[in-house]
Image (tube, rainbow, N blue to C red):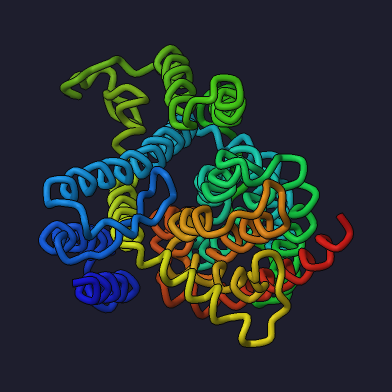
Length: 463
C-alpha cells in the first residue's frame, strides 16, 4: 500500500510539472493526489507498521499493535493537525494577498513606481533584488514576493521581461528569509522548536544568504534579458487616487506589524495578519468613494472598480487556484510524512552518505546529507523535511547543524519553482511555466545555493 501511495504522489507530481502540456491546471492533480493519498491511507490503515506523530515529531514504531479504532482516531487527529497547520499558512496568505489587493485598489504601488526614476533593466534588477532580500526577512519571503511582483506588474508591462524579474525575486526572497526567524516557514519552525536563536541565526547565515542572492544577480545582470532600458509611459507614474501613498504605507505597515504582534502575544502569525487586514479594511472603507452595495446594481456610484466595497473587490481578485494548489500539495506531502516515508528516507541518507567519505559532523551527519536536504526541499517541500529533521537529530540549540539545515531548506527550494511558497505564489501570479523556470532560472539558483553553502562552511569555523 505504501508503494501505491508513492506512485500516486509521483504521478500527481508529474501531472503538476506537465500542466502546460496536459492543458490541466496544476490545482486539479494536486487536489486529486491529496485525496487519493489519504483515501489509500484510510483503506490500508491495518497494514502500516509505523506512524509519524507530527505533533510530537516522533515516529511510532508500535503503531501496528494498536487496534483499528485507535488507529482511526490517530489518523483523524493527524489529518486535523496537518489541516490546521496548512490552514494557518493559507489564512496568512489570504490576508496578505487581500491587503496587497486593497493597496492596488487605491493604486498604492504607483507611489513606489514614482520613486524608481531609472529605466535601466539592470538597475531595476538590483533594486528589486535588495528589496526582496531585506523585505522577506521582515515580512517573510511569501508576502515579500506578492508585494514585489505586484509592483513589478506596474513597472514592467512586458510579461516576457517581467517573468525574468519574478524568477530572480524568488531567489532573493528565499535567501532573505533564511537568516530571519520570521522570514521563512522552516526557519520559523526551527525558531519555535527552540533549535535556533535570532542572534545566532543572523551571525551564521547572513553572509551565506547574501552571497546566495548576490551571485545569481551578478550573473543575471550580464544576461540579454536585462540589457537595455524598459519601455513604459511616464505619464502613468502619477497615482490615480489621493489616498495611494496613505494606503501603501498603511498596508505595508500592517504586514510589518505581524511579527511584532506574534512576538508580543505568542499567537500564530495568521492572527496578527487578520488584525492587520481588519485595520487596513476599515481605512479602505472610509477612504473609498464607492457606495457599499451587495447587489452591485447601483449605477449612480459605479466607478472603475464597480459598486462593491474595496474589500469585496480585493477578495474577488485573490488567486484562489494558487491557494487550492497549496492546500493540495502540502496535504499530499503530509500523507507521506504521516507514514514515516520521509523520515525513513532522511534516516537512510544519514546512514549511507558518510560512506561516500564526506566530512562528518555532529552525530555522524555529513554536509552532503544537509545539502541533499536542500535539493529535496526543491523537489518535495521544505516544511515536512525540516519537520522530519526535528525528530531525527538531537543536537543542542544553536548547533551549527540546525543553522545549516535552516540555510539549505530555506534557499534550496529556489531551484524549482514549486519548491518554495514564494515560487508557488509567483507561478500563480505570473503563470510562469515550470520548464521555463527550470531552463532559465534553476541553474542560477543552484550556483547561489552552492556558493552560500561553501560560505557557511567557512563562517561556522569562525564563530
